[in-house]
Image 1 (spheres, rainbow, N blue to C red):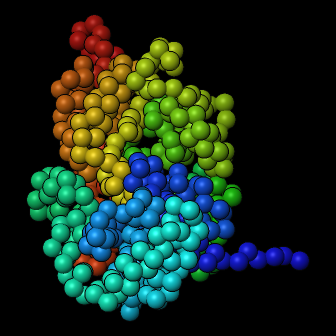
Image 2 (spheres, rainbow, N blue to C red):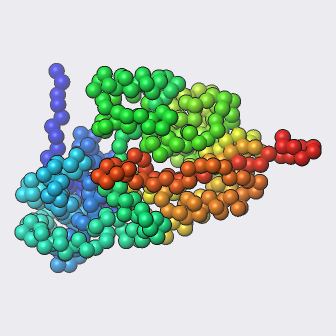
Image 3 (tube, rainbow, N blue to C red):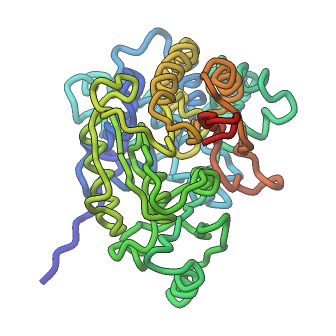
Length: 452
């Protein structure tokens, strides 16, 4: 006899979301915080938390108007903001039941938020405050929403500095870029062509009622996202989840059988797996985080791409003394750390975790990593520079600097900056934001000046 697990009460979901928001405001990633939520609660808590991250500026602005003074503590403030984000759902979204928007009865939200406040000693004595603020909002919703609508961070759902940076970089496209983050990205798969053809997998999906369309060389975009375990072929390693923009890396790099390849900063390993799917490689997989590196190994095992030809190393890519044996690589993939500003629709907490000062710090780290990695590239070999960023300091400006500063380099064709823009109004952008630059180390000249 099987037992079903009861869904959590909305009060439990709201309190868990408040805890997640408190963590994000303290500088912790939402992914890490969600890992501490009980398994049976995680799906609804994640759904509401993601929505709150997208609407955070609205919730915070309303909280400021409704409180006479500063919130008594961060947890009370977070609970109030979570409830206000849900209460501020646009009426058109409520009527149309937009899929990614969690819609609840307004008075239910108020009552459950008060019950949530009762759950912790830091919030229990302020349940009356929570109740008064939320009921005040319902009485004056129209005027309060009108009052905050003039704020740029409310209109676009981003910090002011982020809006300014994007607007300066893309004066003709900035509105579309910011608007694209309001909707979750599509669920895109990369077919493991070592195990099955894309055509065969597409037919199998159709037989199971899963609608999808092809993208790129090996991609399938699902019409509706689903849990991975409910999609045929996951356990068999027939596919991986990977955004269409990230799949471009495997289409750019000139891989062929027998190459000695390094994937630096490899976790979570999607690009590692893609290259191994394309050719038989002597692959070194490097990441500074041993726990994340272990997950890469698990993914490669599921895809049947592991083996003696794959070497795992946990080390700092910029410190060659920690890991490099002196043998050069034919290809280095430098998917360097960045602000991740191109993937905020999938990780909406990122825009609240980053600060404008992070841009220069991250750019300096990227340069240190690439300058070290360039030493490991064999003459005639390649380095692919990748970031999931929109900011030019991490993209085109960085690539120009590297082109000028790396010795014996020539820059080859690559997509450059790809932006998360919808193809038409009202549709979802087909890919996240990425930057790609491909460099080749000039071969050593032999006798007579010929390259060898």
